[in-house]
Amino acid sequence: MVVLQVLTHNVVVAREGKGEWVLVKKGIGFGKKKGDSVVATNLEKKYRKIE
Image (cartoon, rainbow, N blue to C red):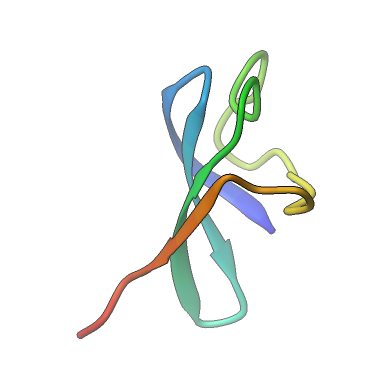
C-alpha cells in the first residue's frame, strides 16, 4: 500500500490497486510521507472508500 496522506501518527490514507483505505494502527503514520509504502498487518481498523 502507498501512503496518500498522513492524518495522525496512528491514521493514514493509503491506496491499494484502485481502492483507497483509511488505516488505523498505533504508530502507522509516524515518520511516513506521501508516496511511502506501508505494510497493512495487525491493523486495529481498516475502512474502504465506497463510491
